[in-house]
Length: 85
Ligand SMILES: [Zn+2]
Image (cartoon, rainbow, N blue to C red; front, side, top):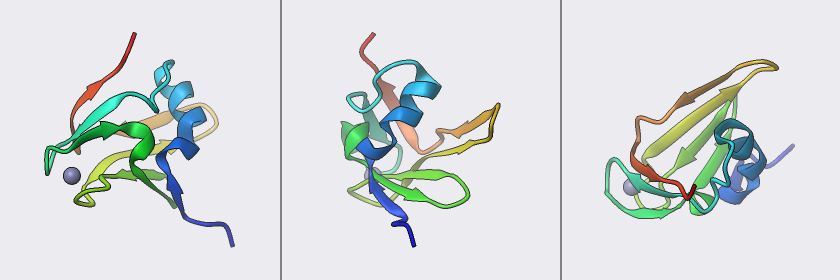
């Protein structure tokens, strides 16, 4: 059985595909505890989709579900996302 819990850096390719930028170094601020840190440091859980959780409080930061031609992204748990352009 595959491991269901991953480091945030493990989904770098998926994030690059969705956001067209290196998101592992983007800084997200948790909408619950206000902790800020790189997306590559979040906890990642795999199931029907990908769930990114805050490593400080466990808040669901984002959910990503991908099919062959579409991606659904729920970012309601992130207060801000700072991306280098
Ligand atoms: Zn948090």
